[in-house]
Image (tube, rainbow, N blue to C red; front, side, top):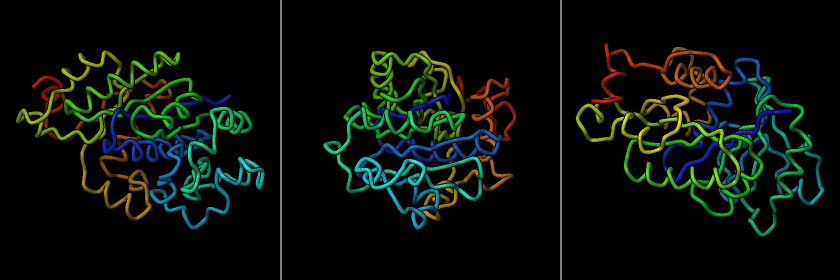
Amino acid sequence: MSRIVVVTSGKGGVGKSSVSVNLASALASLKMKVCLVDADFGLKNLDVMMGLENRIVYDLNDAIAGRCSIEQLLVKDKRFPHLSLLPACKSLSFENVSLEHMKRLVENIQDDYDFMIVDSPAGIEKGFDYASGIASSAIVVVNLDIASLRDSDRVIGLLMKKGIHDIQIVFNKVNPEDIINKKAVTMEEAIEILSLPVLGIIYDDHDMIEANNKGVPIFVKEGHLLHACFLNVAKRMLGQDVPYMKKTKKHLLRRIFAS
């Protein structure tokens, strides 16, 4: 049976979907069988970020209406043979789908995968309820600003109320210079506020924007810093004791944790 992980955040714009796409790709590169679930009904952007939008024949609407099987709904990523996407649908609203719909879809395929990575809508509305309702663990994507930390703290509390206690943090869009120049909070301060283990660190890089726009996950670019960052997070998810990814400046990681 697969490990079902919801990737969520307290507010939009923190890079949650980018983390979902690239983390799923990294796990698949490590020979894990991964299903990436787009649970952001009404927006549907993972297929675009992965460059798979032209290969989608069916969507969640078709599966719920019985026009296709769950196997027909899945789209395989040719770059990563172990990775499949379960796409959402722009025309699907929360009135057309229930938590039971989602649970049945997941139950039909979860034995085929090692991981199901569920990209949740940001915030605490129905979409979050549906996405978190099918998960057994969670990754909260956090930026090092007070608004992100405050909203993340609220989401963490809601996850715990739902019975999800296996929760870890991924710090995303980390700019070491902002931390050193006191334009952002330190990771040490953020950890004190959220009181959760850190799964990994993803550094801020403009190449991520270009990758998302071109539909080519940044993880595809071997040798890139962000490729190494996501590979590091994936290995930590698999229980490997690997250090947090560092930038090249000597002692930089120590300084940005408590500058």
